[in-house]
Structures are given as structure tokens and as C-alpha cells.
Length: 363
Image 1 (spheres, rainbow, N blue to C red):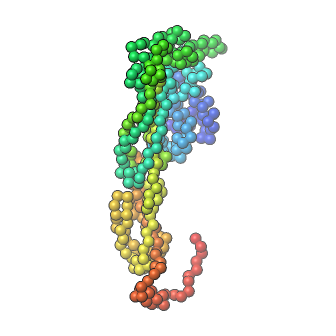
Image 2 (cartoon, rainbow, N blue to C red):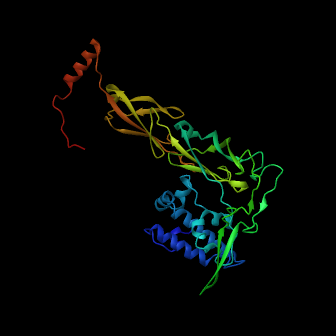
Image 3 (cartoon, helix red, strand yellow):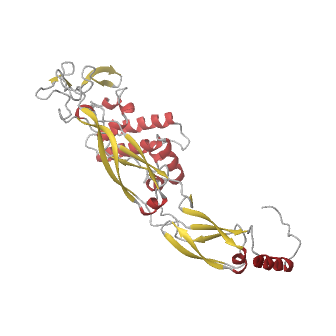
């Protein structure tokens, strides 16, 4: 895949205004109305839109700068590929809209605004992150009115065609310039782009064509997600006004704090406290993992603070077959109370060991 900065012809430290200007230039060059029946130009047009969708988004751009295309895929980000032209024009209306740019080469129909996106946050335990989980949640969103089927008109009545735009939903204004005629298309101010006027509005939705209802959404959370990752469910957001296309459902993941483990990327960290004899002679202990327990051999003479690694017992890497490790930091427990027998043994041991401490450089 080509570098997004290369596609738009900008440097990696380019400001947002510069990126936007560069995208307009590339999009104008490969605009489908300027290159009819040219599949190569259409592909370049979509490629530029994908590049702009990433570089104009702060989080996506940061991921791309750090990890490239792989970073967008592995962290739950979408690169922003577009399957058709209408997706591009609806996504970047601020660029293709107000200035007439979208209709510069002959006019492209303006669609009614789609429904707004919904954002929800899903808390997950480490156990759920390790295995992946299927979640079903209840959300409140705008749905098509059941009485008027989303039309906004009273059942039995019919919306009338807007006389201002003659049902097209848009008003065109032609200007002459040194480049030729420029067609500036704006949504009709009378019908707000729908092409219809409702004389008898539906009493259930008050003519809007949608009402807020409780809905159910089910989705699979892949193993290895972390706080800040998200997934997009296309078309599961709020329904658009009067039958227009719905928005998306954005699902953000939030990792719950674990009582034992600390996460470091795909690795898990845990503290283990052992008795002094085990540090001297070594031992075999059982260490908890997210999915059970494993054996760990403590080597003789281990020092307090030393870290032992258990490979493959951490968290799975998102969209990969790799798995992190479990890091066990060994701490030597100093007993606060001893019975008489243990006290005599410790006293005898103390007399056998060097009496003066060993001083070393602080690290």
C-alpha cells in the first residue's frame, strides 16, 4: 500500500490546512466527472479520499506515523477505504460542498444528511480481553417512526413535491468564470434537501419521521483489545431524517483495573513474595495467570527485585497469533514475627553470615 503522505504530496509535518488543500488538488485532478469511464482515475480518487480520512484524523494519523498501515489495522482503526463515490461525498461534505467543488464538473446530486453516529463505551475484564467475548447491549437511538414508516406524513396522506426545487432537493446557480461555467448546488431551503413538503405531519413523530426507541446491538469483541481501541458498526447509529441513511455505531473499549495483574502492552506483570529459605535454596511455586495457574521454578540465590519471564502467558495481540508474556517480579518476604524455634534458627544463621553490610553503587 502506498504511503498516505505520498498520495497527497505533502510532508509528514504538514499542517491540517496544508493536507486539506493538497487533498482538494488531488481530488480535482481525478474527479470522476472530469475523468468519465476512467477506472484508473476513479481508483486514484478513492485512494486520495482514504489518505485524507486518515491524515485529517488526529488519532489515526498518530497511529499511521508510528506503525504505518499495520498500526491502523492492529489497533482497531479503519484505514477509511471507500467502496463508492457517495460515501466520499457524504463523508467530506465540507470540502465538496459549500464552494461548489463537488459540482464543478457537471453536478452531483446532494443527498439528505444521514443520521448521526452513536458512541458507547464497553468495560472489559482481562479475562474477557484474553478470550474475546460476545456482547449484547441496549442503546437508545432514533428509529423510523412505525406509524408513518419514516416519511413524516400522516398515515393516508402524501407529501407534496416542493415547488421551489421541483422535487430535486437542491437549488442550482450557474456562474461564468474563466474556467467556464461553474454550477453551485445548495440544498433547497424550503424542503431542506428532501424534495418534499409535508402538509399533514404524522402526530406520532411530529413530522420528523423518526422517534427515539430502545434497541439491541450484538457484537463480537476480538481478543487483545485495549483501552482506546474501537470498532465501527456501519448503519447501526441514529436513523436519518425522513428515511435517509443511518449513522454508525462507534464502540469504544475500556479495560477494567485488575486486582492482581498490571498490563504492559501484551505482557502482564505480577509481584510474588517468597520466604527467605526459598530465595536461598530455590523452590517451585504456582503462579496465577488470567486463565489458570502455571508452575514457576525459583532458582537458588535469587535476589529480591529480580524478574522471571513465563513466555506465552500474557495477553493475545490484537489481530495476530502472537501472545505476550507473564513477568513475575520476585520479592523476599521479611518475617515480622517468629516462634521460638524459628527465632533460634535465624539467630544461628545470622551468626554464620558476614556481620558487615556490602555497600554498592545505587542503581
